[in-house]
Image (cartoon, rainbow, N blue to C red):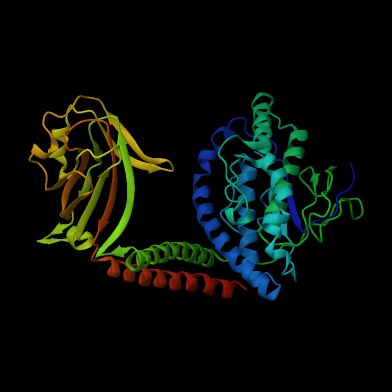
Length: 479
């Protein structure tokens, strides 16, 4: 054991006593409001971290208002985890604030870096931090660290297992339930792992260039007992030394007053949600433009080709519900126009059949028939739900239920003007035999596609602008 050096990320916690023997069993329920709020806060955290990345790359500085906000989100997350699976170290309910709460037993402060390396910002959060991710993966894998592991920083969320932190916290809670005391040795070790995770979270979030030490600084207060691991050679420039500084307690970092009022936090979160929503609209609008300009041939937009197979007598779609007929105007027809289905047998020259019928009529025709319903798609092809039964009573061409159908040898083409209603598409061998193996190409005229694309792009720009304003104004005022 040796005295630990001072690191810019200061994590401090006090073990409350006495602790309830039973409250830890329901804390995850009590924290649901926090989980909901943190989910939105972490959306803003990720977006603001992207903005900070750009600012550091251009100016070499982390914008102070963004820094204070992101530290607040990490602090909030740390208090929630200290109350719950991250330690079970207190029964005091975490406060709903980004600011430091001196009265709460868990604290987090990060020293603001006046300058940051423009070069390191490109690689430290993914390449240089890989060894750290491997270590804290053992600590947190599956533990409910709500968002101290953002995807952009290279973390992966897992729901399998608790990780060492969660496992030891539960063991400590079980001992507490029996004896009424939280084992101090487990607390010290758990806090050391929590401290390591938060240091890596701050480094991956670009808040410091000082590489997190491969060192377990145990105990609630820094520095306490230290367990040093071998430092990988050449991991990162500017990394912290394994042992540095005089022995004794390191002075806590002085908290800085922040301009993040509740209203400004809500504005940033709302802006982040609008920005994310705008990105979805812009992506959908871009896809619509791409389909309109590159996938339209002969007036039809190609919707893709898929091969369907079943050992039964037919392949059927799920019910397609189109209910958009309002006062004589059929919106489904206006949106989709005319549907074209091309079907070809993949098992030889046998005649094929494809038809579209009202869902109820198709269900009656297929009652008692062995067939497969397409319920989805996977990486290997369509996903089916099988129905047991025998052959159809009559060949499909004689059923008299079809709104549109095509049958014969070679490639058959079905043309159907789309109408509102409940519909089922059925593909079979024309003679009603089995098995069925068909390749189907779908296309539609989609006359409304240009208007849909324009609406999505305009909406995306408006939401993006509104979200940017909601974020920029409080950032400026908070600074």
